[in-house]
Length: 138
Image 1 (cartoon, helix red, strand yellow):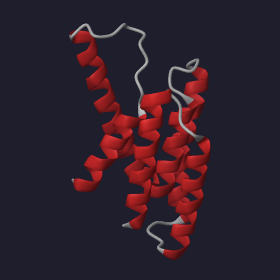
Image 2 (tube, rainbow, N blue to C red):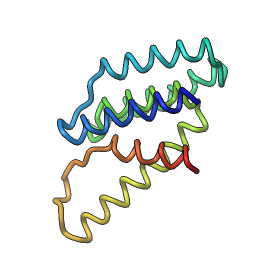
Image 3 (cartoon, rainbow, N blue to C red):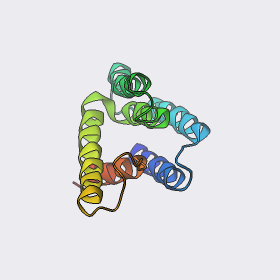
Image 4 (cartoon, one colour):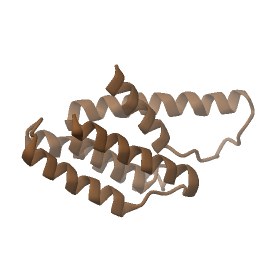
């Protein structure tokens, strides 16, 4: 359970950074990743292979972001690698689906209400934070 709170807190910090600066601090991600590994040593919830498999989805996003010319930021991929470390592959994919649906719905709402330009970038990590919060309470 402590892992859930650490991850939620990290996503909260990154959400504020993403909203304010449109980027995240890598040192916070790194510190949270190291803390996640240490917590795994004392309170193991999943195998190391499941943790590594969860991180692969984030690595895939980093690769996709490079191939797509930066349409999704490197920080988003790093955050998904972090969430994969804590959640494992299956829960990280569920988190991805929920956060993409939330972000897509918000983007569609902006377009329908004519509040934004077509190529406007919106911060993604806040949707990730909300999605993880929904996973915890659900």
